[in-house]
Image 1 (cartoon, one colour):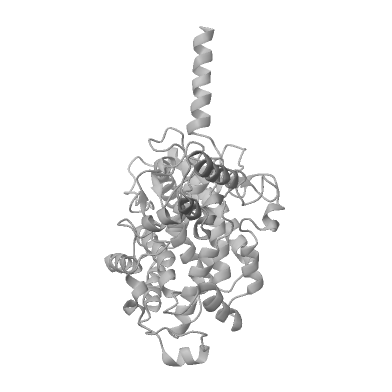
Image 2 (tube, one colour):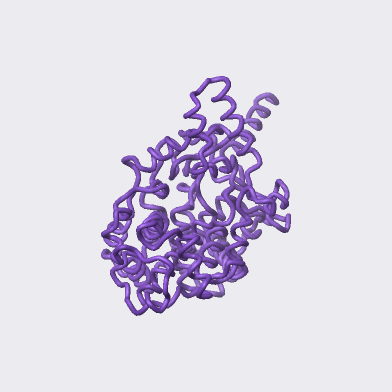
Length: 451
């Protein structure tokens, strides 16, 4: 009898650690590589939707009385959440519902036209005096508009990993170095998406309704990431950092000091490494695994020099920093935060600055703080998965706020408020379930269209 109980206890412990670990959002037995699929996030999201709906249906007095988790061990997401999965699905749903509005719909409709260049005003261009001008203000006529680029797999389902994007690293799939040639062929292959396709998809979704639905948010985030490569192409407005962002610095519409704060969180800057192995963004094992993999391919498998050169290509160097696990100790040392391994999102910064630039060239005002939140929601919709090439909500928020000319401190204030509100919604809705009638309105999911 003791043996049976012991075996049962061991099986339970194994399953809890392998498939339900509180700091992980993935499971070993996911039917894919192991620890790479979105299965846990996808299964948890409907409850977050239901909790949101229940919470919003109750009075403020009822909400206030039930909006805390009964579990005192809340160590995730600004110490508001019991598990990392709770944090991820709650913030995703809360933020998605926050921007599902007519104002956000109008904003993104206008943003698409600004990015395309169809609304460029000569007077605005002359006043701004950009360093570089495109051959044609209408970027839909440029070669880059219908050309796949290095971001073309962002938001694209990966059937091998069970998530999105080019690849994912995990304890059961530790070696991801396949080289620049493989990366180039994959991103430019049949699964890759062009800026033109992004525009057409988003415009079609915007025509379906008058608010910015979860599906439209996902499409908008994908567009912001993929279209940015076309906007900042050499034949168009020029490099996102050395030209577009530099022009915004010159006009006082972005701060280089704030952008440098983003830059210094990225691997392998010493400022990040000095945070210590538990708090830093830079993956501890990722670079070791990369070097081991390259040594094995070069000396044991005897791969040809061109293959090794392709693996060492600077264009795919950041892949070595994709972590085995997506969490780190927070700066205070009293809880845990989601972590991409890639630092604060300079990609989000560049995408936001290019959009701000496009708005200015079209005679529009720069993005307001409230409008920046819409962009954060859209980018989070794309990045909120188990993929290896992603950014966390806080990393996105910092990049977007700084790209729009605001500060890292403002981004962190927004993030703290969001975590608090999302946790109250999530646990409040869960606690209020016994008080609601069985029949609830149909739940509209904030899951991505491909999930």
